[in-house]
Image 1: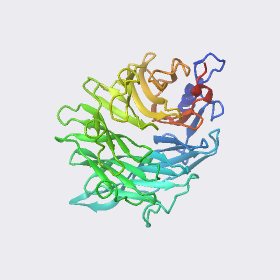
Image 2: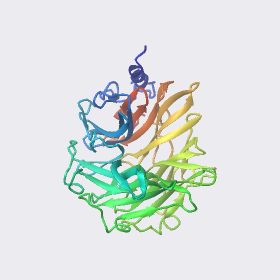
Image 3: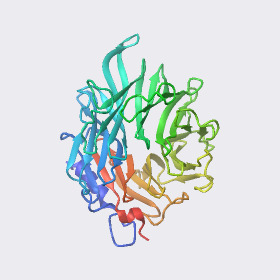
Image 4: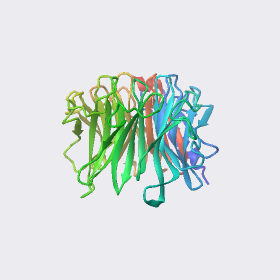
Length: 438
């Protein structure tokens, strides 16, 4: 039998000549094996589900997600220590003593300390449901080397972690961000009575609820008329303003509309942004679903998603919440690569240029590929990178999915890619290609 894990690595590292300067592989040859590094936790390759990636200022890469252990999901966090991606160190394994928990987000502060956000189910009966345990959002803080920071959050059984309860409800997904003051923002998708809403919580620098934010430290966001609302992005500005990307799903026909909400640093809606603090993404299609969001140093909001569940797009909003006429066409640029494209993550470089990674289906007689698109500041593709601004790694007919993206201090985009049956991989683009090779 062919070793599929090795086959996938070979497919990912084969590479095409995407730039005419003499190098055959646009991935960083000094990283891993020709730009690719696989991730393992305790000898487990196949049952990992990566959710997030971040890069510290020295180039150290951090990846978080979940792994299947017996019948439970448990969080994993890995650091790829050295600049070449070797000397991997796993930490945060089984942070909650065998309880079911999942890491879904990562955030780094200025000191390189690592916030891991996710959900955990504790064996505590809640409300009137004798068969239901209590679901919490959690944020755990580690130092830059991966040791738990017990000064964060309340003391007790899970020192180093802040737990946020969702009474009588289930936590589905959690995003985390850190603002310039070192405060942690947490958005939780909470399912109650078949309807999902969003709870945004701010924690002070020591991991305790910040009561000066919103109502008792929280903002509760609900859609009208029984619709569900789920977070698709969480970001903060330099001055502490909070941005939430969200998808509203109709209870009538299941259509999805994406929106961006902006709150002042005290948690109240920013009435100067869009209409009363919100912008609805309407591209004149039946459905617009957001996947991810970022805010640049000028307060402009970048969002990526799909229109009609198959056409990928990126858009930029001005600080006032208007579609930015200086970006793309009327503020929007479409990304059509395969017959169906699914954006996974968006990241900005130091020059506020957007990079988007997506999974593209229907290429080359049905093959799947991971795409990395480089944009100029005006929303056009950066033709100096990749092939007309696009770098592609074909997975052939082996299933693979883009799961996360970060840009390091050298401008190198770094992606995490998942293959359900074949492992988890980190790919780093060569600095030469990230900067352009014209």
